[in-house]
Amino acid sequence: MPACTELPVLMYHSISDDSENNVAPYYRTATSPKIFAEQMALLRAEGFQAVGLQRGRELLRQNGNVKPVVITFDDGYRDFYTHAFPVLQQFGFAATMFLPTAFIGEKPVRFKERECMTWSEVRELHQAGIEFGSHTVNHPKLYELGFEEIRGEIEMSKSVMEEKLGAPVSSFAYPYAFPSADRNFVETFTGMLKNAGYACNATTRIGRVRVDDDPFTLKRLPVNSADDVALFLAKIRGAYDWMNWPQDGFKKLKTIAAGACGRAQPRLCRAS
Image 1: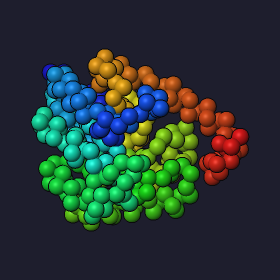
Image 2 (image 1 turned 90 degrees about the horizontal axis):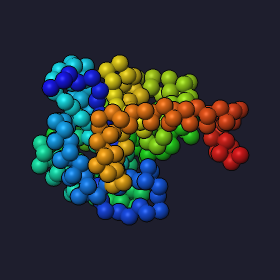
Image 3 (image 1 turned 90 degrees about the vertical axis):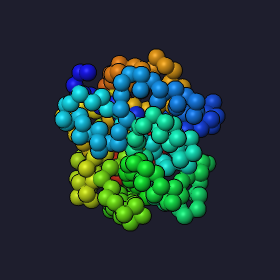
Image 4 (image 1 turned 30 degrees about the horizontal axis):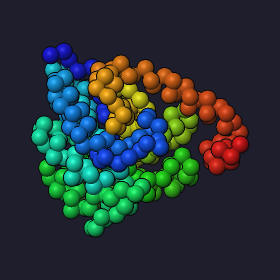
């Protein structure tokens, strides 16, 4: 088996049959349980072993003969517990779930019209080997907040998770589109993550992770029910990595167009 030089990090949200007919395929966040199981079988057929994000990064640095893939889930939806986890167990796969802690309670809480897991379910999954990371407290658009508010979101979520799990939390996932074109924001934000004790940050930037990539701007590969077999295989094999270039280019154009509006006044920028 060839050495591991690129790490696919898949990005899922809801594992459900939710209808998203009014949403463009690229932006859909639901993957049906049937398609999810088929995708996990494809990973196994391709020789991948699914591990948590931290373990995946370790294996990438070791450049060994294991062929790792990281399966991540954002938002803490309860259908991970009911639909995704049993499939992962079937294949002996691990995964990383990023939680917005305000929506994880002792009883089910709803977020974006979907029910989220409870802390008892999160602890059960943690004991079974699922890695948990922070997805902020309230899942806000961080780019529209002041840095003190951002600091509160990243520090409080980590503190709450570590208290509830009795274990360190070192992974973070940036909610919504990552503003990679704003270098000043990215530099300040990643510095805050480091100071808070995080080791990495998963983003919405498209592509596989390489060993020399910045761990605080990690790329991922979005997946949903619209991915047929050919597209899914293209993503995990690297034929989708080129999408990072037009994605970053579009973000740069948006930043230039915003001009003097700046990050501190995003609502004024969008109104024009």
